[in-house]
Amino acid sequence: MNIKAYLEDQKKRVDRFLESLFTDRKRLSSLTESVRYSLLAGGKRIRPVLTLAACEACGMGEEGETLSLPVGAALELIHTYSLIHDDLPAMDNDDLRRGRPTNHKVYGEAMAILAGDTLLTEAFHLISNLKTKNPERLLKVIGEISQAAGANGMAGGQAIDLEAQGKLLLPQQLEQLHRMKTGCLMEASVVVGAMLADADTSKLRAIRDYGAAIGLSFQIADDILDVEGGTEELGKPAGSDEAKSKPTYPSILGLEASRRLAQESTDRALNALHSFDERAEPLREIARYIISRRS
Ligand code: GRG
Image 1 (cartoon, rainbow, N blue to C red):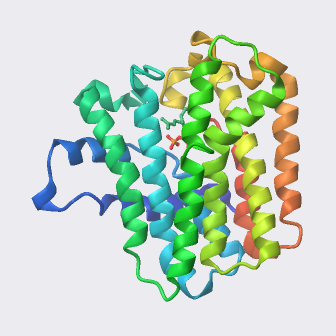
Image 2: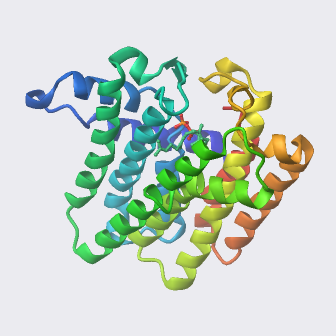
């Protein structure tokens, strides 16, 4: 399959859906402007695409077809909130994101905080508003995503990351940090796709293993790109991890060992899908793409 064309098509579907959000004329304000500024600034849309691909791999199901796109979009809202808050002066203090000035550089810190709060909150509203014959399943989806974004996931990982700056971490500690900060939301992206397709326990387990493994390889690839990529390709300043004394895979293991670890993690992701048929091909290709991407 042509993974580039697949990713491009799915990204377009996601972008169209995201375009339709925060457009209520009565509620248009500088807050919604600032939300749309970051939400529609581009981005690979990898989390919603993972939701769509996992749903497809598990057979889509009656409601998977209609619900996987809005649920995937909700994950992109949460991801965008995390980027806006991550860029704030109190956190990473970055000026550039997705190739444009960061949200707080354009709208000010207070509005950027509110834009993040809005995106996180509205993500759950979006899911809770979906029409379903199986509300219990949607509750499970909400549970999965909220756990991945909260203290045991992304926010908790970000807290550990802040405290780790300038410190030497063991490889296991680095893995735990990244598992929480980046991996949990990526894992949730595929798990909710599988839930919406009514996957059985063994399929759900396999999809979760796949998600955990690509979450790790995504982060290692991100660390390597920060060393090797250019600012234009990345849409954010290259070399910023080192400049901020952040512990990263290349700084702890070296570049070669980091590449090996990313490949091993990709192999684990592919192994997790061994019992899936050709409908899992997009997931397999995404796993390969994650470690070969340039942005
Ligand atoms: C503020 C609670 C809170 C959390 C922030 C995700 C995160 C936690 C910070 C982002 C810092 C960062 C660059 C992490 C590395 C991995 C990562 C999430 C990269 C950005 O995601 P992509 O590559 O970005 O999917 P696009 O722009 O394509 O959406």
